Image (cartoon, rainbow, N blue to C red; front, top):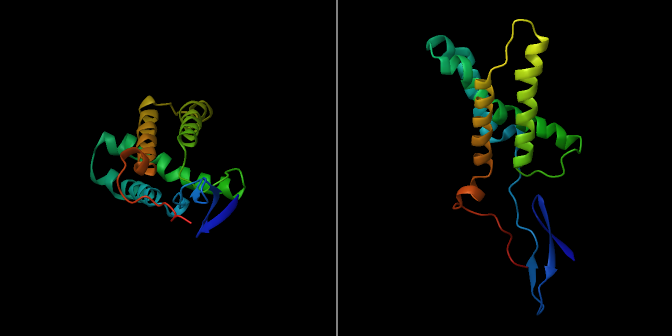
Length: 160
C-alpha cells in the first residue's frame, strides 16, 4: 500500500482491481484549535458579556447562564491543543462526540459538585449544567455540520 500526500494529509492508497487505485480515506479538514472560528466567537461572546452586557442589561440569562453556554466551545479547543502537543490526541480532527461528552462531564462534575464542596458559600446549579450541555450540543453540531447537515463542499482528494 502506498501513501499519497495532500498538503497536511497523508492518505493510504490501495488497489481496487483492474489496475485502478482508490483512496482508502477521505481528506478531513484540520481542526484549528485556538484559531477555530467557534472558539474565537465563544471567547469574544464571553468577554462582551463579562465587560458590557451584564452591566447594561439586568437579565438572569446574561448573569447566570450566558457564559456557561460558551464553556465547551471556548475551553475545549485549548485543552485539545495541549493534549495534541503532549501526544495524548492522535490527530487534528474536530473534537469527537466522546471528547465533547467526556469534557462536559468532567467540567460539570468539577464546577457544579466538587467546587461547591470546596469553596464556602458556593452552590452547584443544574441550570449551569444545562447551559454547558446546550453549548456542547451546539458545538458538536457546528464542528460536525458537514456530516450532520450535509451540503457544502466536501474535501476529497483527486483520484490517482
